[in-house]
Length: 97
Image 1 (cartoon, rainbow, N blue to C red):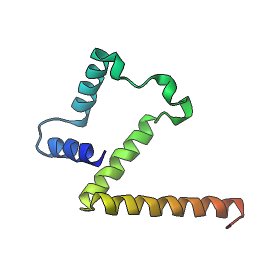
Image 2 (image 1 turned 180 degrees about the horizontal axis):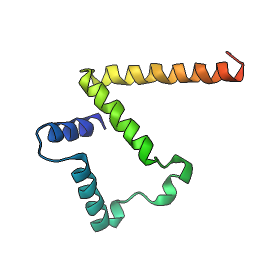
Image 3 (image 1 turned 60 degrees about the vertical axis):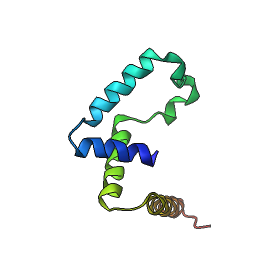
Image 4 (image 1 turned 120 degrees about the vertical axis):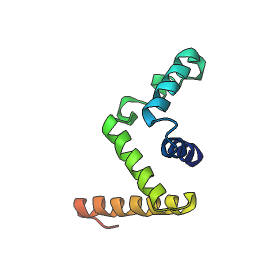
């Protein structure tokens, strides 16, 4: 996944295409190859990402790339963030164990 994100970022930086261009191409390829599509039932409705969530993910990836982190460093950072969020949830519920 990181390799694909890096390729997308490079294409964007070189001015060869935009993310929207890539989304359009991917949509066209999926229409031409219906067997390559993930069935809509594979991910129940609550797990489908909203446009806002996709934007946040794009922003996070952009920040990680700007920070010059390796994929391993990025993964460690995101895991730490996940733990911080879990602790925040526990504190909000009044439990810390």
